[in-house]
Image 1 (cartoon, rainbow, N blue to C red):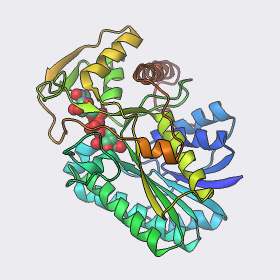
Image 2 (cartoon, helix red, strand yellow):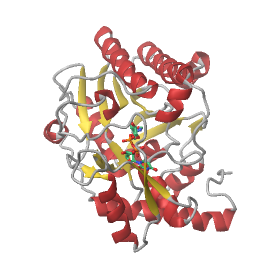
Image 3 (cartoon, rainbow, N blue to C red):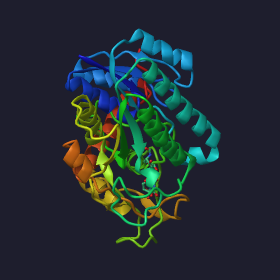
Length: 351
Ligand code: WQD
């Protein structure tokens, strides 16, 4: 089996991607210092696939420790690099923490990839690199605007670092620009485990519905959109995960036309905050307690993807509907509540 190093593999998208890698006969190796995650999702991966995934609890900002992982794992076919801090608000408060963590870890992993001749590299990027676009839907050629946050800046810089490294080595890479990943594995055995109070809309909705949060604040309904609330492109985490396997296979099969290619991972459907809430209420049969508050600084009014390149070149076809995204997110929140009853702590550490 082809070995794939998954950094940040204990995280939300990382764990879903590890499941998909296993189901496609790859051998994932997880590297995650658990600074923003626990090993709880590795238990879920085992429950789903029957496989016990080893996690190297390594801080990728430590070059020697990162290097040791490569020494212990020869013939790595590819690296999927998820590991990064991703809270927009926190990045504004602590920019140096974000630049140091997100960029040093990337540089170290790329140095090792070069030294150990790893042929394929997939970089976890984000639609945040577009800033506030003049024209939507955005294509991969849409000019980038100045980043709206240090987090966004680390993704823009990260893309440049990967592009330049790729052209200077024989490595082939792909940048995947996620829009808004939401939802959970259909069996509710893995899902999103936000650290602290969730910033993102969908975990905030499900935690409000389950009673962890008293009331959801909708950040503004006075935007010039069809219902006044912001528009985003929500995409199921399993669809996002599968795109990584398609991207890796695309490189392995040498189907890429250039050493570093970029793909938008969105459904192509723009959906408003209020439409997300209404979808959730419909599938959960829960009347959500929310109120309209002021706009959130840094929010852009609307963005959604032109995803035709990923469809055409990677043969990617996102299949989950908005209702299915909301239903799987809700089932996962209900599972966490059961786990809390069982283990006393929703993020219980795997022994
Ligand atoms: C979506 C909409 C909020 C919470 C960010 C990053 C992006 C990616 C996903 C990492 C906005 C509104 C939210 C709430 C609300 N991060 N909202 N009440 O900001 O589009 O994207 O997270 O990969 O890179 O930029 O996602 O879910 O925070 O917000 O009204 O309690 O929901 O104002 O309009 P966002 P989000």
